[in-house]
Amino acid sequence: MSHATAHDAGPAASAAAFVAGLQDEQAALAAFSGLLRTEQDALVQGDAGRVAELAAEKADKLERLTHLDEQRKRHLAAQDLNDNAEGMLAWLKRNSGFGAAAGKVWRELLAQAEAARRINETNGLLIQSKLQQNRLKLAALQSAAAAGGVYGADGQLDPLRGTRSLSQV
Image 1 (spheres, rainbow, N blue to C red):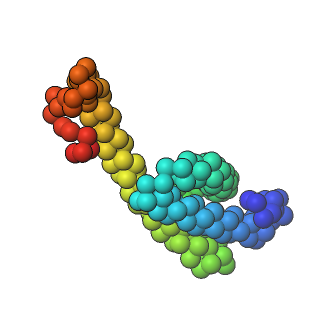
Image 2: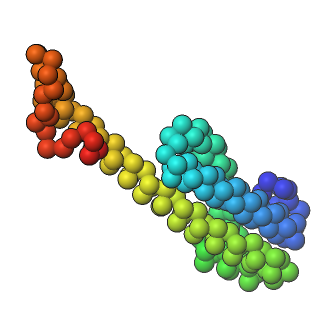
């Protein structure tokens, strides 16, 4: 785990390092969730520049979370446990001295993961909505361009022949 490499120092040290790793994962997930909320605010405000700026930070935080998740799974596997929630519950039962503190962190981590999933899903829907709006605007502009322009050769207003006017976009 990131706080200690006490795997060979005994079961108690290994369990303490594992709990510290869970705490790191929970803190990293909280930071990631906060970033997703910031991204959501930028999406709602239509601030594409800010969304783009957040992409690199989002990737960094996701990489950190992936690393911590892999550490947790490796530790569980080394204990001959499944690398999933079932394995985590078995670990908590085996390590009753750490069970209360680790159980609390694990429950918080699961709750944060669900909250992050919901925020990310909402962000995806917001992005899809913005993309659809942009597609409609682009289609209207392409239709207007295909209609030969707004003004005729005589300089007079040439009504758009498309199905939608630019003001409807």
